Length: 512
Image (cartoon, rainbow, N blue to C red; front, side):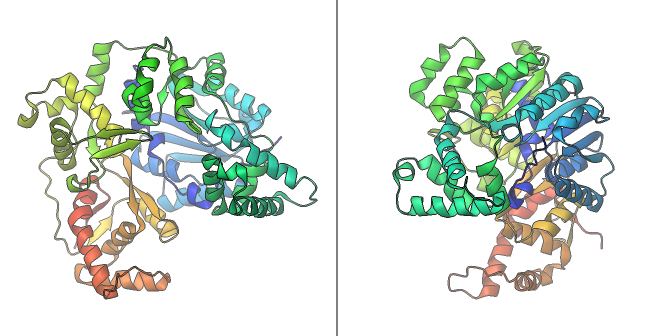
């Protein structure tokens, strides 16, 4: 049975750093499993690739890798192929295939297999074929990323799907019209404070999010008969049957007991004998709705000293400047402050130049700390989403040209992302070629990035105003002159964003 996966347009155009080979390797290393060696090349496959935004970006960041995208939606595959042509990617291939026909696809074995937002939305037959595909095509020492709707968190909204299905069961029309009828019904119930919504904040938030989505996406989310949420132990058993072992969570902070649950549960979790127990009880404590799991094949565990050695050689950098770094990270009910000496010193150094723990030990400001303590501090910094494993270190001798008359966008992917998504969503992610990661930015910063590459320095503000006018976009001026407001924002961009964007290779001085 064919099950076409539908995702709303904005989600389709989200680039995900969690699918980056560098990041997947890092999570595995954090949990004592060996990373995939990617320096000389690797094979990477995403099932349910959608329009291929993340995959196309990764293909440009890792030219030695070979990337394959598979989806059962012809519109998505056509869009992904068009995007790849616009980027001029030669190391990426997209295929239209139903998930039940994967065994007939002529494909190589893979170092990485990604299942992003499909596993809970396909029927039992398709899931079995996907399991067979993983068993047959994931290399020894390979990594699987698998996300799915989780229990018990997902149980809070199960009645909402059931009642919409019941409410529309007598309608002899397509699912799109049924979905709109279901939304109208739920809106009536929610706006009148029906007990289910009044006493169930998770369901109310789910419905509020759903109301602003594309109606095709709503139909898929509410009326998909194949939908199945999972407890972690169910997924773990399915993966064990095909020779895979759980490594860790792609939600970085969940790999650390100090950050995974509130204080009152930590001692209880420390008494548990297995990681399976830790994950299942953690899901209940957090009432987690989605899981993002990483599995490895096979289950080779490295020793503690070897793990520290590998972690100490990983390059880390920041995705923001030092003065913009948020010194408080919030993980649900758990808070982590970076407002102490070792964190602040690391933030200052990494904001300027990406470093590994080994290279950091040469810094005089860290001479009083052991390598193990620096490695641990980097782990906690990486949990906050502002510090990432980087592809390479920046050259200390590079002088950032902040006074160039004009700049160019150095990535074909970024040009296409801006061309397709400017003004169409609140945030956009551009890839950073020197770092090997994606950098999330506001649409205002995306506009400044584009315009600084389209106009000479003394013409940029006027160019921005022209872009806004052509797109019928208004800006909040707080009573000030519109041009003055844009000028102030652009000057802030040049001061706080331009140095980082030059450091990471998002922008570079244009040849005169």
